[in-house]
Image (tube, rainbow, N blue to C red):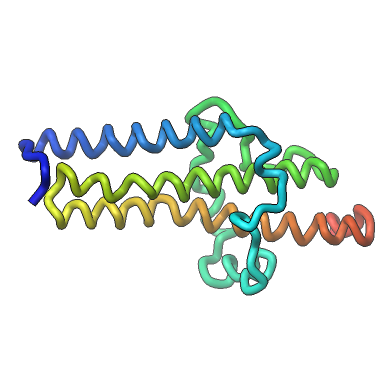
Amino acid sequence: MPHLSLPSLWIIVLDIFAWAFFHLVISVICLKMPLSVFLKDSVWFRLFAWEKSGKLWQRLFLVKKWKGRLVDGTAILKKGYGKKRLHGTGISDLKVFAAETKRAELTHWLSMAPAPLFFIWNPIWVGWIMIFYAGIFNLPFIIVQRYNRGRIDAITSGMNTRGTEALHE
């Protein structure tokens, strides 16, 4: 039983506005974080060996086929670093792009966190739907960020050891 009792129409409206609010506020907070936070090699964003520099995500989910259809949040907020295409091929450009994938990944992980709050005003079964929604909506974005960062990390590590020719392989 929800802690708050509202008519069904109001619950639906509240759910829509709550998700919009949470997504917007979390996105703005993450956008305001300095780039230096994401340029660091943090344990939170480290890629695992089993991800095989992003190849795992392509093998499991065929990321290349659908990643271009995802909406980049910068198009909605009109702020931030667009990740639909590279902004340059130099090592510093690629490192900034990789850092921005960390920002986007953090945004989507944090966007799932409010899901349990929906149990307050929704019936339990709807609360579970909200948890499911949070995962289904955000996980594709997280997968794409990890896929792209894996590829960029492989390129930049190759550039560090062999020069810029690794980018053109």
